[in-house]
Image 1 (spheres, rainbow, N blue to C red):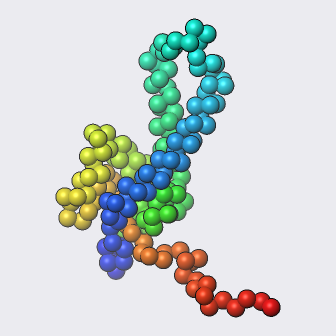
Image 2 (spheres, rainbow, N blue to C red):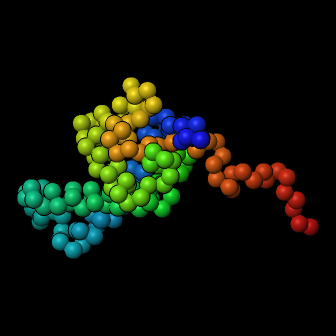
Image 3 (cartoon, helix red, strand yellow):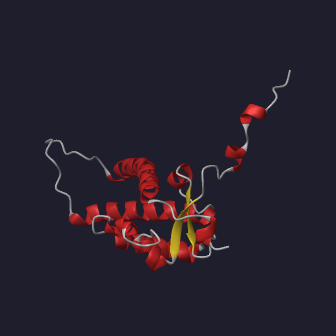
Length: 168
């Protein structure tokens, strides 16, 4: 049985919803990172209350730190369960073409391909609208895909709580 027969490709709507969920988690992580950077490197506002003139290099360092945090977030979750937290909520999973959880090489390749395909206004994601298999551009490039796991993929959801007998 192929991956397509077992699990269908996740819809663009589910993928975008999972990314939105993950964005809020990443934003919280960036807030903590920003706070730590401010504590370590100093006050954010000068005494004259005018905006500080920052060297472009310092801004690039903060952006690089945030980018590395995104990479570590997805890399960790894709290796452990094949799902970020947003993907778990929306019941989707990133897998290799054999339908298995990705290894480190596949996860890193997927992230780098996603970086490139998402740069021009997220165009790579919307490639799924014209691709016959509903794959985003980074899915095609990396040899991975995101699949929908179904209505009740987790063991806790499969339990029917109405049949439970309460102890007396």
